[in-house]
Image (cartoon, rainbow, N blue to C red; front, side, top):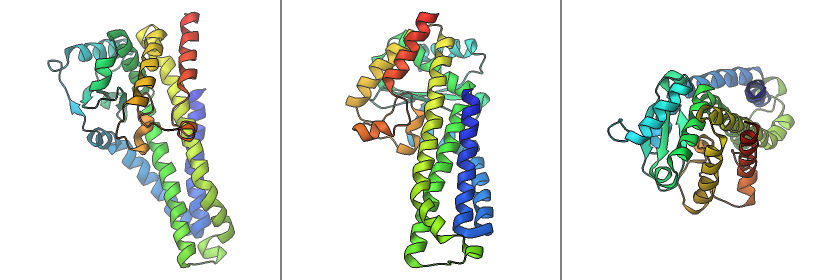
Length: 281
């Protein structure tokens, strides 16, 4: 059900992007938007993992360099019937982790030095299992494509704003409908962001449940989330908002408005679901 919901939301984002192109530029705008969507999806598929790892200065480590971490990843990957992913460590105090890779064969797990200091072995295993669930379900690719298209929609809206300021075509047949374009310029970025948030939150719930099944005890992850949520609010991380959806807990701190538009579901709800899952098991 989560997979169907995600695909519907992705299609909605893509159609929205193409529709905005049509409003701003008529048939030619729709065609350009379609090719842009295809190009962005291609770029996200092949290069997003390398860019994100480089962005956070992630260092690939061997088993000799991080034996306990490597052992956890290898054991859980075997349980999940996944190829052994690459293992990376990020030199950052905030305890956090993320997975990346366009498919299971190219999967990678990155953890911060902060999370390795904070969590015990069982809790760290719960986190790694969560990330492996993302890899198994190709969630990172889906979320990256969603973020890319949502960002492009916002960019189109900005282009429309500048076009209206400096003038441009107003012919409905050649340049689209200017009134509809004005409405979409305001509404589209908000709608795109809401769809992206819905995709990200859906995949987080799924990864929590999938990770709990992989590790065998939902409370491992529930206990880890409690510690991570508290610590992430106290210890900052210089994270790019465009990649915040990748982390197991939101690396960005802020007030009520930030939490409202967070790419992550409420931590209390995630913990409650895991605890209910443990009782059911």
